[in-house]
Image (cartoon, rainbow, N blue to C red; front, side, top):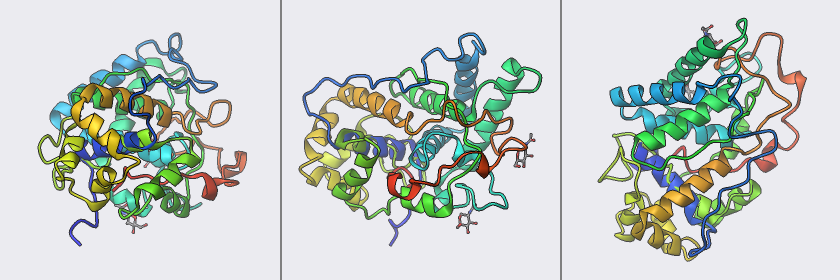
Length: 324
Ligand SMILES: *[C@@H]1O[C@H](CO)[C@@H](O)[C@H](O)[C@H]1NC(C)=O
Ligand SMILES: *[C@@H]1O[C@H](CO)[C@@H](O)[C@H](O)[C@H]1NC(C)=O
């Protein structure tokens, strides 16, 4: 089937966010900011790296100007990281003898190598600015969360503040975890909702856009590299490219939200911000974990045995639409 594989584009990324947002939201309710997770804070680097946010923003602005597809790539990388094992930069680790990294698992095919490289480059700049005696101060997971945030803004989407202070995992998810965390493109709305509920996301979160972003198969054929509500407009007009996307409009649980977001871009932006901030705090490491020197590799002398993430991995990983 020609639709079997989804690729990322901003529109697709928006599509995921869009889909995320649709499930569970109260149609008329005001969307509040989700609480800041314990151990994180909005000004975490205020003293240790006051220029961190400015460094990331300027990098993303320049890089996206040169490669417009990078914005979607970074947003998807952040989602991908969060939905498999939590927002711990595990997706950035190169595979090693202990098993395949998230990059090697099948959904890897939809993650852009340029996005991985961009995070390493951003992290290098942060280390140069703020590293103390070669020891980095800003985690790779935070660098990724900020880069995703700036990618949204630079593409015309909403600006929002990101709680910071995540630490990086010394271990990556197994290929099995990755498969369990990412649903097949055929997943139905109820199936997706069931998975999201395990990580405390709901229908409104599901209806957020993030499905794909690349110019090969833009989900939003009108504005593929702009972060806007056209994904929902297309669904209402029955122009969803994939059956499972169109299902968001036909399913009574998500239809009212699709209609609302199609009519009201601000409502969509507000819900997106709430959902992405919530997603960005899934199972974050604060007292555990490390701040990687190299985003592609765990720090020397650390490994799987330092702490365990294996206990509930199979049960609790959400499936996600972002990678299709
Ligand atoms: C993606 O994952 C598959 C399955 O593990 C692997 O065979 C393939 O080489 C990977 N591709 C890339 C580009 O890493
Ligand atoms: C970071 O780690 C990767 C994977 O081990 C390695 O290939 C790369 O050379 C490292 N980068 C630097 C700057 O050391």
